[in-house]
Length: 177
Ligand code: AZE
Image (cartoon, rainbow, N blue to C red):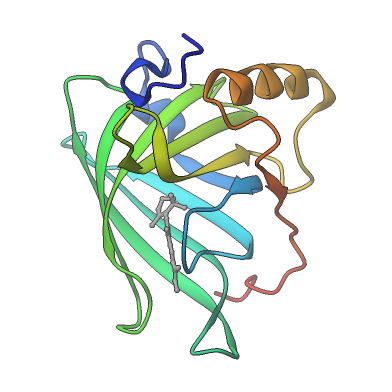
């Protein structure tokens, strides 16, 4: 499972979205091409009584060359035959923020401490990912527990993104949003 083919990327087995619900802090990210969330990124997932997952997320962005703000984002998720793979439709609270449709895969999680998110936006002719993004999430704003770091490193390797992440700082910039 290390041929870097998007179709062969292993995802979380028996993913349980109700255990995934709640707030996650991004501690590291791999950026896609173009505009993206810079730092102070967190996401809160909600599962309603019918089992449908939605989320809101925030993060610092710079738009229109030099305007720094917190992007307040919303998402709905469509289930797929694989319980760890969702089709995400997302949009911003303001119209000048980004909107679109992305894959939302959960590669691995223990639900209580860490989660590895993955989204390939464009699959190359050879089946590898040409453009995508990924977040390492923690339940703790302070980062990953030392005991989870090796698991996360091993998974980054499995999804062919080892060495491609940057740390996501939390400075309180988006705390009021
Ligand atoms: C994600 C967590 C689940 C909800 C959402 C997420 C993604 C958000 C973006 C936002 C980009 C905004 C930009 C604004 C100028 C995966 C973090 C919505 C991709 C670039």
